[in-house]
Length: 142
Length: 142
Length: 142
Length: 142
Image (cartoon, each protein chain N blue to C red):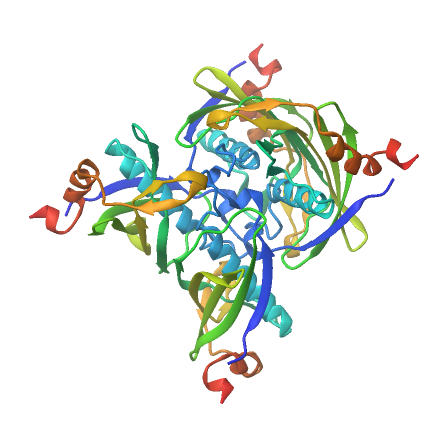
């Protein structure tokens, strides 16, 4: 299964008094990696269509932490699509530092149309969006 | 089962361009609620003992998001201890806004002794720490 | 000159590997204190009027740092209005911990009407908004 | 005067409900650009020397904001050394998006030796550190 990879140097502000990168940052890293992944496909997590705005709010996020990383460490993130539902997308993120697994996370978001007053209505993932994600799913590798 | 409750007003910086509080903040909220909970018991997530420093690094965190919250909404968080292991603690956090469930999260951390160079060694949860958490577990309600 | 005061307990996520609260957080603290101040007066930094949305974007922010603060320190912030222009407001923030000055900051924002596509147009500060801020200026004390 | 340049794509989490990048992020961007700048010279904002740890805490930070930037905008930051004191360094940061100035900031930090219990003692900037920064000052261009 192909994946999308990006790297990120850990910043000073991301560390905490324990001397390591604070766990909450990994949820930012996941979104950032997702955006880079979608960007590489000409897609985004929020965009203006011909007549409407589309958004992909998160409904679930989780992460397991295996090893700490520190200021100036370069972390590589591998993104795959763990599940491609009718309107939901579940990504898996594997974080690696110097060949060692650091953390593994999952995020599920739902494809939505933005209605008035920022309200959201889930809709089917549009065919072109789905087609571009397909190769990054397990079945897409077949 | 008793729980610990605290409230928090959603800040402007916590919102995103979708007009809602960004999901990643809930992981900060969970840690903050945990700290308030421990504080109410005279405990902390990192403290100096007689001869050593103790720390409770997170090994796992997850959250499901049910409804969005917005700038200036007041969110109540209820903290319980879902599991009290030999050296691990799993908290559950229920976020509520105006009577409606907003999000539900879990965080597992491990009681550690801080060795040189910020390295961590898991140890058994000290008896006094355990005794104070016990009432907030399901069995503690017996 | 009267001031508005609020307190805040320093959070774990706000610390960095130097063991102190990262300087960038003070700009969040200033906005948070401003919002609490405005909230106490029945005002806000972004709100829906009868027909329009109003917003107060920042055009300038600065802070001098005198002493570090650490995890679980309780910091008191005193807010005053240093300058009340035609459409701009300059706040001053004095941060104190255990009687010692910690930091002193200033933020200038501009009263704006939100036009289409999130564009902003500066307008005169409305009379009721101005009247409520006046007592917190130096001349307001006369 | 030569400068150091780096770019950064604005992230979703950095936006706020006004649809623009929240001003507080620019203080993170400044530190990040400083670290990249120092990194390009083989230096850092916190490092272990032969026998001691050195750190560069911030004593002052300011920023003026000219134009908003939005999600996925690519912002270029130019770093120069505005003032090189005996133990203090003042950086200037110019943020540009599509040829337009976005913001301009300044940060002053002090070269310190880390003593026990994370206490800091200002010391003269070491000669090799100073020599590497000199070309990025106004006089260094002579």
